[in-house]
Length: 131
Image 1 (cartoon, rainbow, N blue to C red):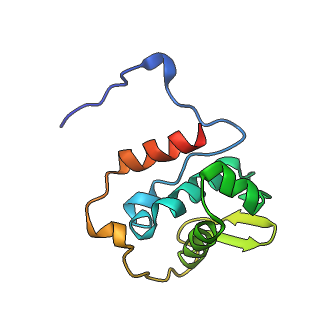
Image 2 (spheres, rainbow, N blue to C red; image 1 turned 45 degrees about the vertical axis):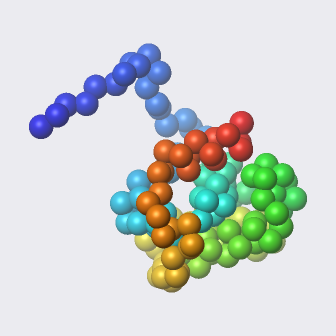
């Protein structure tokens, strides 16, 4: 068995009081496999800005600008997250939902899912948009 050691011990992650980490079940239970890049970006943004109850009030215009998404792409990403049971939305309020608490709707694979997805590249692209 291999032992893992931090590369940079001085910068170990700690859970800040204002937010929590993304639930690992997002990957382990393959939620992320059903999401487009815009849906992943929207989910990560909302998880990051949500309060302890998962609530946030970002307007579509602000989200579109921050994530470089057209209104149609933002709407499609939001609908995907709602159908996957990851998000509730009642304009103007978003709520990031706990994983595994609702039945998920299986979506047809997104055209981009025909090939293997490099998750590091996805998060690098999201980071580039957000920074």
